[in-house]
Length: 138
Length: 138
DNA sequence: CTAAATAGGACCAAATGGGTACGATATGCT
DNA sequence: AGCATATCGTACCCATTTGGTCCTATTTAG
Image 1 (cartoon, each protein chain N blue to C red):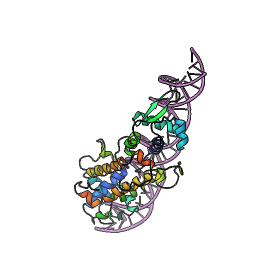
Image 2: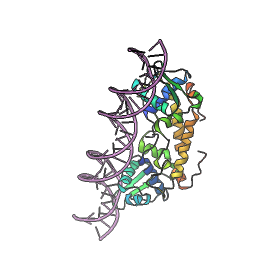
Image 3: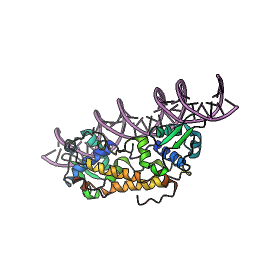
Image 4: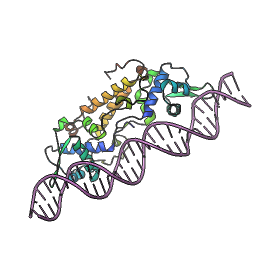
């Protein structure tokens, strides 16, 4: 329903907490407690974020996760893309396979809407999530 | 995946075709042929659009569907809302029920993003879908 | 009266999302 | 060396959503 998954929401909350003390290495249980995301889900989510390069992991005892870039360099769009893959409102705005292929005049319009949304998501970085929501200009 | 359903896509294509000759009453099989949406799905979709008031129906022989308003008065946001219900990116931006209730500082940010997206979708009307995609300003 | 339409469901199969579990591997500490 | 603490990868399950079909009213033109 034009909605992003809970996991994306979890990812945002987790990363937002990590951004409050970048550099620091947090383990899963700490993050789970701080964010009230269940430990298994936090773990699952962090693994994906690590695989996608938004965070870096340190294994072994006293290991954990750390942001791989400055919070200002990580946007909501990055998070969504990491968890859900390429952002594409409709099938036809991504890979081929739209069943209405050639005789569809509205595909370019979808693409415009699509990039508008992606831009909105790019505007907002983790760093800005720390402050109050005063991004009405985005 | 931040994606709208195929049915919403079908709805847009169907309505777009109807907008090319507003006032005219089209039946399902005509619309299905014109848009290459299968007749059963076209029927199912048009029923919803009629229930939601975007189009009006005439029953009986030589019946069919007709736009209930001028194409310029029907936006993509209307279509999405008709098919998928209220637009809300995350659970917490709609009804209560966000599991991270009170201690979530990023909810207001989601709401900002959410309304940005809704605005994008409101900007584009059926009438504008007829022309080329030159809505870069939206 | 009949044919052509929509209305409104029920229904089903496939995909997706949310969540859990488990074995493997890496690392710090004693 | 050995153990406790971590992440890694993946497999798995269940509930929900989606995509799609079909059938039976009901309505209306001719």
